[in-house]
Image (cartoon, rainbow, N blue to C red; front, side, top):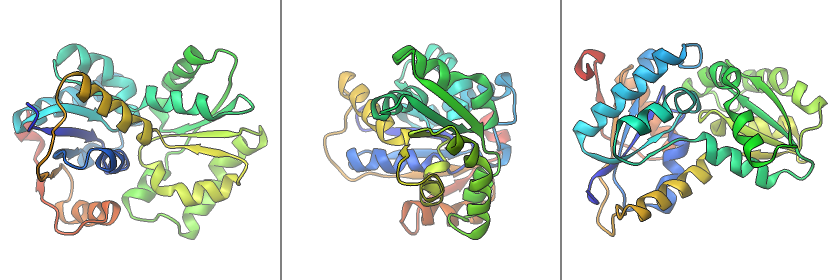
Length: 268
């Protein structure tokens, strides 16, 4: 089991922000990353649909040989984490609880902003997780539907990105938050734009960092940490192989990755 890969699933390539953090602290581990580009965005779907996608993808990744799985998508975590943990006997880690813990730890004034996809915001899962840790914290939210397409198109810091960021973030600036939780794994790729729009007085929280630490601890507890060896990474997409491969290589800073096109019919 130790030699098997760590699985990652996302509606697209935002989860690469989590993969990059995992690679920093677990460089010896192999990964199998599933980008469900054809069915994105998940944020506009209902819980039942998202939950079904999560279970379907984890089943596929298990057949490819994984020892653990990271649901590297806030929407998929909100809708499918609990069902997935009950359904499978491998370690399954989501991104919401680690992000909530990091935000509470960082806030000085107790005024936290959360930006995420529509489903994540409407589920109020971040509010619930933050309140569990610190009941008196004030939380302000906004969903940002145009951020994800910007990242998927590779538009990380152009004029359009700044204009959209200003529209979404100004309401949070007005309530004087001191901490902003990036509640979608795509958003760290817009870190520069979001940070400059919010200003230096607002601390940005990337849940990917804490998620990587939680994963490492879970693997350690289960005796699943790979001790050494060269990692073998494989990427899967349900979308355009050429397009997704190109943007993936840009985001992870590696050329000539192994990426395979997966038809939805292949995963049941």
